[in-house]
Length: 223
Ligand SMILES: [Zn+2]
Image (cartoon, rainbow, N blue to C red; front, side):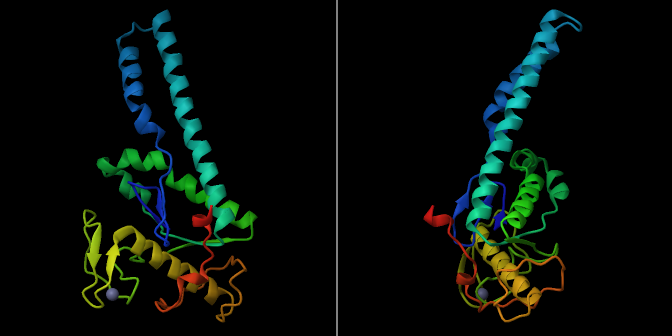
């Protein structure tokens, strides 16, 4: 799956997981409360009341975020055995102020942490792509790698094979390929070991673009 800002995750099947965004919805309330707090006299009863209100709202936001993420990671690890994720340089992305709120709302780190322990609990595996693995810029059909792909480009056509791609779905497919080839290489290479999880991290095999995505157990759509 490809993790993003407009949607929490896009699966290689094209399914989109929206994710929790309580912060955005409650943001105006949060701003109003903080403004009213700053106007109150320090040490006053009114200020203490406003403080308590603000703390309650923060707790509510955290609760919504937590519940939604847990439900989501439970569903995903129940339905998917092998999950390929990209190694997001989240701290780098958070520095971009346009992305920062959405990203902290999404709770990427927590999402990944939950996926990993729940997958392990259910005998599945989460394979995190190498930080330099160009999941977005690589054509999932033929392996052609673009020089660059600005974030604003959502659809593109491969100059080599002519395949047309949705940016996020293509990235998710590459991560699925990566996860499958990684799991297969870690388990002996004949594909029969797909059901096992690996603790070691051998260098992933060269991408196998002919590998069918059917190899990845996907049942989210049947929910
Ligand atoms: Zn191509």
